[in-house]
Length: 406
Image (cartoon, rainbow, N blue to C red; front, side, top):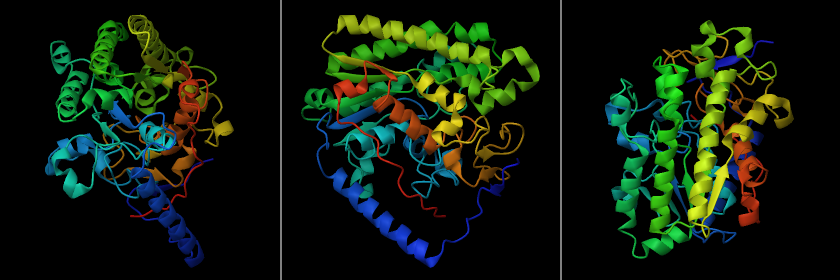
């Protein structure tokens, strides 16, 4: 049955007066609760702050602040941010990301982007409870690695090494920087996904792309060891997603694929998912090696792959649409993805209910999917060791009331 789509910039029907009043009361309550949480210590006492690195999966506004006003990213436009924030925040989703749900589950405020920190007094931003260095488009490897191989980063020249330098500059401004780091949860990504995405998108073979794996993982591992030297005690390290299930690649490789290339249960492309598995296996071996060198540090592997794959295997079990491979926001085609008319561009369309979609814009996930992934990490079996064994009181609340504002 064909899903009804709405133009991205068209406002929804206004709610009834009774519903509007109820939504206003709920929104005021949530705002007050959020403000209260922002001014307190961590509710559960596990960590006092979050420090994040990564790419668009964790970017809470850095790319938005890095780009000039005349060259803003798609995440600066509606419908990005429509579900929870009711306006664009620089997040590549309709609402909150995994990092946001982790922060909320620890009783901490949402983690503020590092860039533009000089105007924190004007914007009300504070890094006391965490700071986010993740930037959309970032790679684990330096840009020179890709340029030498004829691969172009269309979004940024920022790498994980750049983010580590930013962090060291930031840490130097903290009076008790080492203690601050020891009391923080470090979220190491997701990072490394773009190191495979860009080569694939630009026509490099699977063999060439996969050959970068060791260098990608070495970069992540060396960064983790740098952070441990600086005082890090708990580091959550995500693997890569099942990229054979995302609309951007399903669309790109559709014309080159045969029936045997697809998983009969999910409809995902097998060889792309095997690339993610290859990266994740290399990463876990590296984490095991680093853990042996630093037995008193918590190095936690976050299994983004399987926490996400279950949403494609059994979408209705999680309240998602059976048509889990289509993007909510896009411009038509079997997977509602068109590289020339991406979400946020004129002509793109939006689903009426993002909460039943897995993919938001063909490359990133919806808030609903991110909530389920975060829940699987914090409460389920998708971390090694289990996160709940380290922080037993962590929990993910039920979905907040969604009020659409334009």
